[in-house]
Length: 121
Image (tube, rainbow, N blue to C red):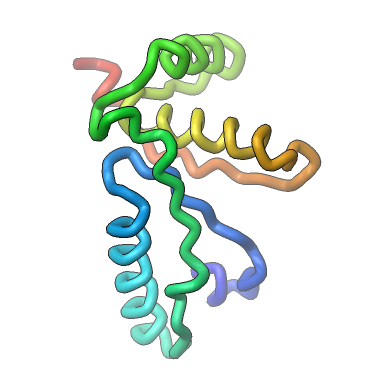
């Protein structure tokens, strides 16, 4: 999608909620390559997949007390809802990666993928 709109130089990083890095990169690369072919891009995206699995905390629906506390504060400050399975894990991971890699001065977009139903259960 980034190539289609002329943003091919933009780095897209995924924060996993369940898959390990090797499996996640493979699934996404296969999908990106197929989608690229469909749109006539004929590129190999295998080396352009950035997939972090440092925030699995044991797997799907698993999290740490530190992550939960961070998300509670973020929700109070922003008014955005974050669950601890999907959007919250991604947001927490992104914020840690920004700090770890000293990216505070970069333009970064967080794609909030939902997860509100997990908060309601």
